[in-house]
Image 1 (cartoon, rainbow, N blue to C red):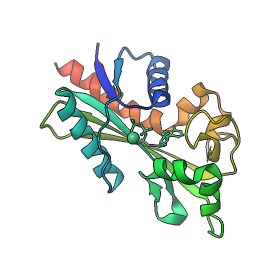
Image 2: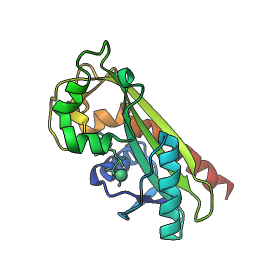
Image 3: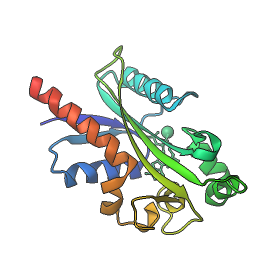
Image 4: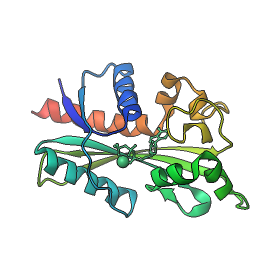
Length: 191
Ligand SMILES: O=P(O)(O)OP(=O)(O)OP(=O)(O)OC[C@H]1O[C@@H](n2cnc3c(O)ncnc32)[C@H](O)[C@@H]1O
Ligand SMILES: [Mg+2]
């Protein structure tokens, strides 16, 4: 059996991670720690590496962190890793308005899990992406930008309009977590 400490302050992320692993029949045990670590500016990979490294130093043990970016094609990938601030300041309507006048509303939801084997080790990254379109908000507003992201594979529904189990079959988080799961299983077999 494998386990990991998931460093996140986001209860929705934790819930989805546990649901995705359970739906796949995985025996990986997840515990969570909501510690505050600085999130640097840079590419999604630089942000993910710095956050995981800082979390492992602070915890003094192996851990997993996760960063989610929402990348607009028309804006060359922005807001990307800065989506949390954009959401807080301009919200669903503002994110839609931002794209007015551009020829495309295409967007990529990008999830990056980072695994650190412990302090002073280089974190390893696992990325998952889902393509979609930015639309006027539809569906419940429980989780971030779910109401304005309509995945190409979602049958016309936004993430928010999907049942959790439906989102978790095609989501950026599912795709990245699947790579981490395979990696941890391989490590457990070697040990
Ligand atoms: O403690 P951490 O794990 O960092 O949690 P966070 O909420 O700060 O998360 P991020 O730094 O990765 O910022 C990503 C932003 O995107 C939102 N978000 C993340 N995953 C999402 C998803 O699957 N659907 C909708 N919004 C999501 C989240 O609420 C944040 O506003
Ligand atoms: Mg964060």
